[in-house]
Length: 241
Image 1 (cartoon, rainbow, N blue to C red):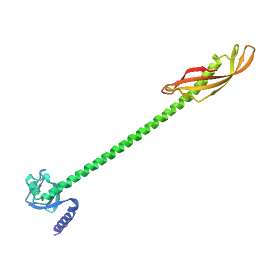
Image 2: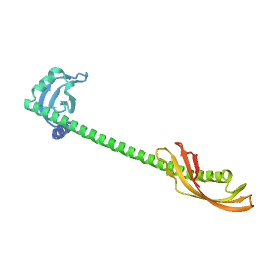
Image 3: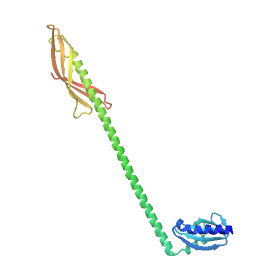
Image 4: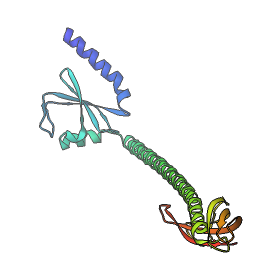
């Protein structure tokens, strides 16, 4: 009596929950003395309770237990018999539901793909902008380095010229002091990494002729050029008087 009560309760719960688990189950209520599935699993007396055309699941009651199997596992003749019991309009509705579900799946996949492409495009744009910012920052650092080197080389070249190559006096003379002022370097048009800087130097010198001291002011121009690493060299020096 207790076992029968457990079975009835189980069956009642199954019948209540079946509509929630399956979209559209159809009552079959077909009793079979024995059943052997295509996977060789065998049963004794079986009742085919219902069939869900949407997902292809068949509900079997075997003794006091309930199980579900895919209709493809049933013998072909039994599967065909079950399919004949399904109303044509139900099959049409199931096909329509499947098509709608497939359409939704395709639409969802397209939306996902579109979102993914949009995200990839956004990421690519962000990466490109970051690359450009880094490149601009490197260019700015390189330019700053070359301008600093240009000024340093201009001072050094002016010192060398006015101390050892230029004669400010009428006889033998030597420069013993100088004062250099430089303008800001400017890029030379049409040349890469080439800068021109204008400068002015005031020199104090001793002239052996007449044993006299003197001062003189000169203007000059220095042109420097750098390689891709920013290493600079003087390519031209002009004393402008």
